[in-house]
Length: 95
Length: 202
Image 1 (cartoon, rainbow over the protein chains, first blue to last red):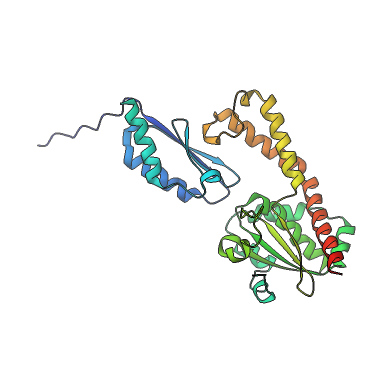
Image 2 (tube, rainbow over the protein chains, first blue to last red):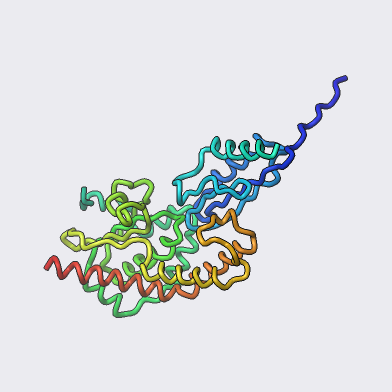
């Protein structure tokens, strides 16, 4: 009989990710794809993933209070790798 | 390359555009129904037949607000030949009408006379409305307790929920309260565009 695998211990200080998306613009697929990527990549190391409907073509991603991507400033949607890197950096700082 | 008559005719009619909308059609049609046009404005356009090229997208708030104005003017004057192009599928046209030479802002209305000479174009919203919204936000950030200490350019994702809710309410109230004023400004600016450029061509 095999013993159940223990779930990985969560990070010492999990990271919060907030995503603001333009609700009238059809950005739901991009938002939900990013949410799925974050959930699969980080499991318990995220304190929360906050999804915030907004307007005027916005798509912003903030990690622990730091703006990582803004459609207004950077144009387009972020590469998932950029957001993953930002989360990893903040997890490393708190380790 | 300037928009040719042939390229113009590739656009959708206003009704065909509405029929293929995948979002915000109800809001656009509501704006169309609620719009009040002054008889003298309808008469002006009735006396000035035009071809009107529109660049738009379903998700754009300014387009949902302002494209119905062109639709109603066309319906009531009987003299505006409107053709609608989706911005992201027609960047060859969009990139001829960039706001400040940089931004693919929409909606864009390009006006042509009966000889298909371009009279001018109009982009996004009346400048005065942008200024009014800016002043509204200045006052809000200065007085609303929910926004105390918050930097004006901060991302919505960095704001507390109460601050975001306050801003969303303020935007909604502003749009509702200034709708008629904004509509009047759009019509006036389109009239001025026609009158000014017709005088230059004559």
